[in-house]
Amino acid sequence: MQFMRLRLITVSMIIYFVAGPTIFSQTSENQVILEARIAGTGMSWIQGKHLLAKVYIDGKIEYEDLKEDGRSDEFYIKVGKLSQENIERLRAFLNSGSVAHLPKKVPSVTPTIDHIEEIFVTIYRDDGAQTVSVINFSPNSKKAREAYSPELLRLMCWIEHARKNAILKAFGDETEWCRL
Image 1: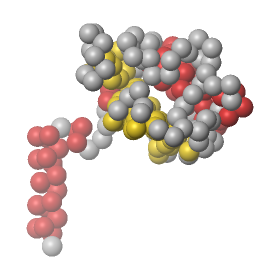
Image 2 (image 1 turned 180 degrees about the horizontal axis):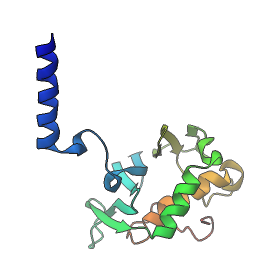
Image 3 (image 1 turned 45 degrees about the horizontal axis):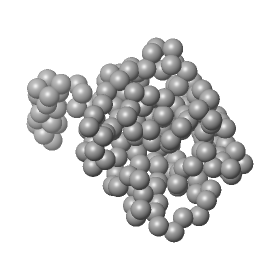
Image 4 (image 1 turned 135 degrees about the vertical axis):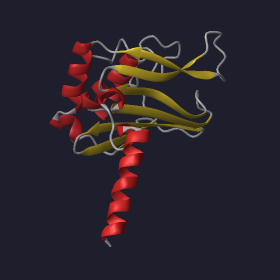
C-alpha cells in the first residue's frame, strides 16, 4: 500500500515538473473573466457559433472578426487589450450584486419567425461561473428599455467595447444604448 502511494506521488511530481504547473492551475495571464459567444441559425446575419469576446484578467482580449476584405464567410481571431483602468472597472462591475442577479435566460423582445441568435455570456468568478443567455438581443428596439435591465445593457456594452476595433459590429450602432 505504501509502495503504491509512493509511486503515485512520484508520478505526480514527474508530471508537475515535465508539464509545468499550468496543468494543475490557471495562471493569472490565462484566467478568463468574461466570455461571450453567439450562435445564429436560420436567416440570421451570422451563421454558426462565433466568439464575440473573451476577456482575460490581465486585460487581454480575443474576438472573432471578419477578414479585411469584408467577406462575410471568413472569420479569424483578433487580439487586443483593455487598459488597466478599464479592466478594473469591468471586474468591479462583473463582481457586483446586480450582475450576479441577472436572469439565466433573457427572451427576445420581438418575435421572429425565420431566425434565432442566441448570445451566451459567461462570467467567471472565484466562486464559480455564471451564464446568461440572451435571445435575439435588440438594443435599438423600441421595447429594449423596458425589456432589458440597465445591468444587462451595460454587460453587452462591455462586450461591444472589447470589440471596439472590430470590422463587424455585433450589435449595430451602440451610440444610442451603450453607456459604460
